[in-house]
Image (cartoon, rainbow, N blue to C red; front, side):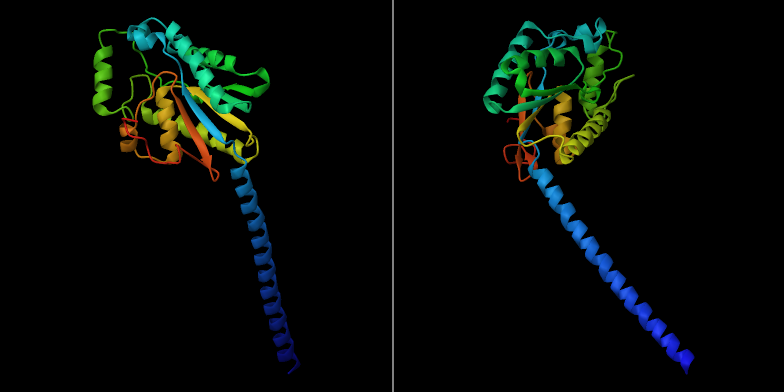
Length: 261
């Protein structure tokens, strides 16, 4: 009888402990989850209000594609018109940003660095928090284009097969650049959500045409067909992403602008 009573007491104590411990763990989890979600919402609200994507100004190779056979792609410079376009882009950005601060990412290619050098003239040095070169936002690698006789055929084949999937010999496909964009976005938004950037900042990314389209494709999770229908960006064209409830949009939209936009 005493043994049976002992086991009944043990079972009752065990059940009470199990229920109590479970409730305690559940309460702790709910409290932790509440504060985690609150922190996440605050971080999203505190993200920079705008991200500007800027294509480099007109380059020498935009005028003469045979230059690829004589000069390394990363060494190709802006034309005089390209410098003027970059200066005008600086004035345009300054009119949008005003006296707010800017945090700059730029491609290590010379034409991108020259573009930013002209843009930065429109800003006070005190507005510029940081200027960071990031190789992940460089131009698509076109491989070996030294043979002028084969250049037209290569670009014709790319247009036929599609810019996203076609891979240049010894170079990259658009899909390869998409992977680089993904890595860059992972870093950027990890910094945003860790409080590295504030709402008073504006992020400026000076890069290349394909990078800009793939940045939008990756962030908004567009399809390859969406990418093919997306307008191309002209030299020194500015694409502005505005924050709405913690997320970035294109003038309040998340769908691709049409080719005619």
